Amino acid sequence: MKIIVGIQALSVITATYACAHDHDHSYTHRSNVPLTLTPPSRPLEWGDINIIHTTDSHGWLLGHQKTSFPEPNYSGDFGEFASFVAHMKELALKKDVDLLLVDSGDLHDGTGLTDGFPPGGVDAHDANKFFSQLPYDLLTIGNHELYIYANALDMHSNFAPKLKGRYLSSNVNITLLDEHGNNVSIPVGERFAKFKTRKGRQITSVGVLYDFTDNAANTTVQKVEDMVKEQWFAEAIEEEPDLFLLVGHMPVQRDDWPLVFNAVRAVHPYTPILIFGGHTHIRDCVQLDGRSMSLESGRYMETVGWMSAKLDNHSKNKNSKSKPKDIKFSRRYLDPNRVTYEYHTRKDKTEFDTESGMSITTGLKALAAAFDLDFLFGTAPHDFTINRDPYPSEGSSLSLFAADALPVALIVNNSRASIPNLIITNSGSQRFAIYAGPFTKNDQLTASPFTDQFLFIPDIKLSVANAVLASLNNAGAENRRSLIQGREATEYGLDYVDKRYKEWLRDMDRRHGVDRRAAQNLTLGYVTTDSCPGVGDDTLHAPLPFFDVPDFIASNPPAVSDDTPIDLVFVDFIESQLIGILNTLQTDKVYTTADAVLYTPVLANEALGIYAQSAWN
Image 1: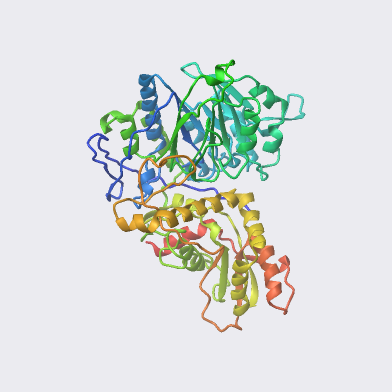
Image 2: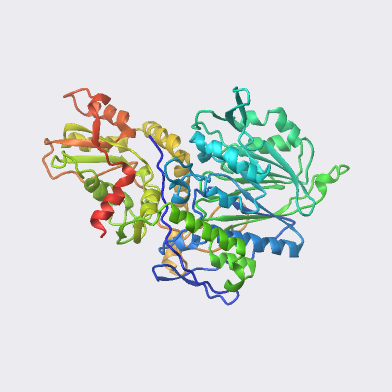
């Protein structure tokens, strides 16, 4: 199975934003649909040390450009984010405090800016140049930097050097040839970093990746539990800094951050520890003790994280025998848009854009044009969502894909088009919603990223084919987990990510959905419940509706009798599991993989575009 090359359509977004001070928060997209963005609920809390956090950006550097909520909440592009950071740095100078900028990885795989490169290119090579234009103090490697060796090599050879020792890969190596032609395994970036802030605070940092096992050949990921036993790690944390800043592509809960935290605490019981995680695409916060805080800041540039801490000097007081007081932390999850940025920087629309920020936006649009990301397939008549609408339904993107798009796309120039069929795929094949309006290459590949082939077995009775779908969805939990993880862990790293992200959305809807949506006084967006005190969301929203969907979906059964032989069509990654189930449902023949042959040259990631050209013009 191959992961697709996603291509982002980058429609020109013309925005007019009013000053945060006069509370006019209107703006207009290309489609001229007027929308209103809710401003933040309160100013940020500043401390002695303050950190802006990004993670799991996956190429969403031109912002979310659709007009259906919640997309406008995340409409700020990376140039506007750069302007925001610059103005926040100015505020930090005026307040005489430290402000740092950190990222927790996964720059690859997600939009055309990263994946839409021409033949011979490298995923995210061009897009990552914009990251290096921002004043990041630390970045760490993610699993999506490691699926393809060429991507990892590009990070080592071209990206890491621009960060001048601040790109961390504490437990991730790459194998290269030395000057003598021998294989050598060295860190992709740096094992750790030590530096001073503008205010003279000593920082010690590591950059950790979770126990990822599907990395490309000639890259290695050491288990976290083994990393903390290394001599270099002991030496790195031996000297006490003013604080430990631990950045990693690892969830802040239900994973191995406690291993790193406890290893530091064994040497420095009271030194402040600030942890910035990622990978599960959620907003989350936890405090492992009263002198630490751990923050995770969402996905797809839908969240900018904020953490502040009011420090004391206890850790530097070697004569103190008493247990120190807890540190006062704050955290916030910001919606990345112009209204948010102008509100917190105290800039109006005439003051906000910096020369550097505008240059980045111009560069991103030029990259989008160079990759031809605006190619138009058709115009989507309305929104199609994965979990906001029930399956099956008119608004379900799963219904659109399985019941509408596949039956059209797979019979193009197909000699078997006249033979009834049932087409089975998995719901996880759809990654992102499709919104009303222009449907471009970006939208196709962002929504449906996998390059699966379609196989078929002929002469299967309709009753048996229908039973195969039911059996796949009713299979034991272990069988389903094995199947889904085998594809998503290997191909897109979404095995745990997708599960955890949807758990979060489901819980959000069940806690707050009905009442907040019924009030009709809030726009749709994230409503976070985490383990830290107070309200974390910067802007108040009503949560999106959430509907559970089956693991496997299919086209509508043909209008023939149950005993009519049909073509059973399916995506290739489920081949062995489907054949195993097929052999339990009938006794006419023992099927093997030799019986499954290619049905069409059309790949799964092409189906929506073919359908849109037919039905949406």
